[in-house]
Image 1 (tube, rainbow, N blue to C red):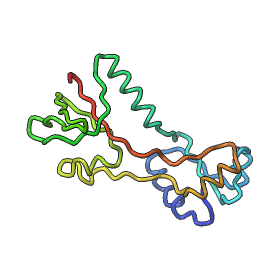
Image 2: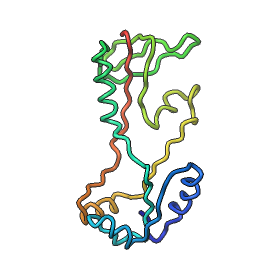
Image 3: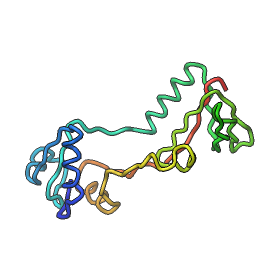
Length: 165
C-alpha cells in the first residue's frame, strides 16, 4: 500500500517484473472493493504480489527444533559465542551457562546479525532489507480501522543446535 509518496513502490515494480513475480497494481477504490475489511483512507494505490507470502520465523524454528529432538538431538537454550573457525570447522562454543558445546556441525539462526557474528567469513555478504514502510503510527491507525492487527517483527533471536552433542 502506498500513500501520496509512492517512490519506494514505483521503484519496486521493475524489480518485480525482472524477477518474474506476478503482481497487480490497484487503485484505492479497486483495493477497497476487493478488501472491504481494510480502511484505505490514506492509501493512494496498492500493489498486490500474487505469489507473495510470509515466513513465520519463530514457528519455523520451533518445527525444526521438534524434528531435531524427534531424531535424538538435544536442545539447550543458552547464549552462544562462535568458536574459533579453522580449516576443520568450528571449535567448541562457549555457552552463557559456563559450559562448552562441541559438535560436528552448528546451525546459527541469527537473522540480520549473522554477518556481525562472523565478520571474516560472512561480513556484509548478507544484506537484509525490511520490506515494510509502515511506521508504528500507521500500523496503529490501520489496526484501529480494520479487522487486522499489524505487528512489527519480533526481536531477533540467535541459537545453535548441534547434532551428536
